[in-house]
Every structure is written in C-alpha cells, then in structure tokens.
Image (cartoon, rainbow, N blue to C red; front, side, top):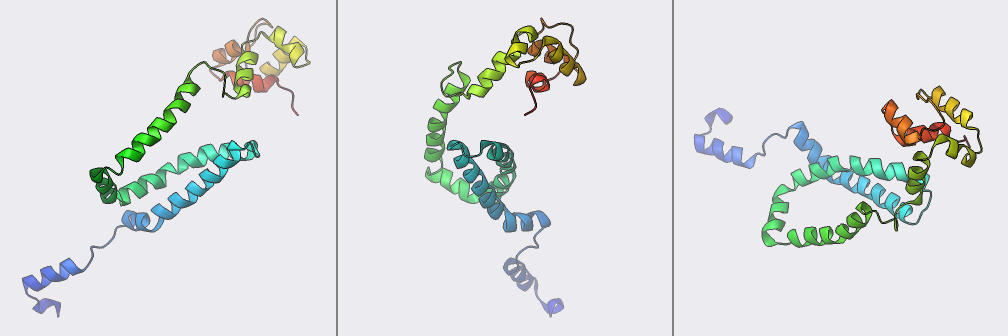
Length: 189
C-alpha cells in the first residue's frame, strides 16, 4: 500500500519507475529513426536516378524537397541519440568521418562555385545566355516576331518598352527572376 511506504521505499520506487514520457519524447522514440530511414531511402533512390539521368523531371523536385524535409527527422534522430554522438566524439570516431566527408565534398563545391563551365548543367548556361540577349535578338531563335515577345511578356504582367531590352532587365524591373520572363516567351510544347 502506497500510504504505508517509507521515504526510502518511495525513492526506490521512483528510481525503478520510468518518468512519464511527454508527447515529443514519445514521437522521437517512435518515429525519429524510421522517418530518417524512409526519407534517406527516398533521397538515395532519387539521387541515384538523377546521377544516371533517369527521369530527371520526375526525380529532381522530389530529391531537393524531400532532402530538405529529411532534415527534421535527422534533427530528431540526433537529439534522441545525443549521448551516443558525444561518445563517438570523445573516442574520435565521429571527427574522422566528418573531416573525410568535408574533404570529399570540397572539390565539388569549389568547382561548382568557380566560373568553370565543365561539370555545370548546360541548361543553366543557356538560360543565362538567353536572358541576357535583347528581345530583338531572341525573337528569331524562338521563331517569333519581337512584337510577339513583347505581347507575351505584357500578358504575364511584365512592363516592356522596346525590343532592345533584355529579359534580365525586364524581370529585374518587375522584381522577378529572369527565368520567369524567359518562361513567358518560350513556346508551349
């Protein structure tokens, strides 16, 4: 009977009984690792598909967005396993993989930030070239008249004065991305 227990017995009982879990702790214990695993699998499959150029239209958005969503369960997973992570750090088994990961990632980051065109997606380079061209120069490439481009831009809410303007300048005036102006003049196919 609880009312007959001594203070030492109550303390022992409190030590044996686990504290009541709050809803965040329950959520972390149940879902942090499974969500991390599931979203990691999606990120892995979509990343491999993108690497081999398999249906990039289907996988690109999925890979980007769900990799961002993956951050939430990873944070929960790290929080749940914080003591183990500290133990890895104390033994040095965390530092070496982190440093190696950074060393492997740096060449990709450096080549992506440099002006070097090798390894960059040619579509991004083409968008840059097209958005920096005057509308008068862009019209024959798109098999349209300059006035058609002006009209298409105006229908999409852009302010255009003449065919001597670039899509980049038109978009900047509207406070939009140059790619938005390009999409307004591209043929629908």
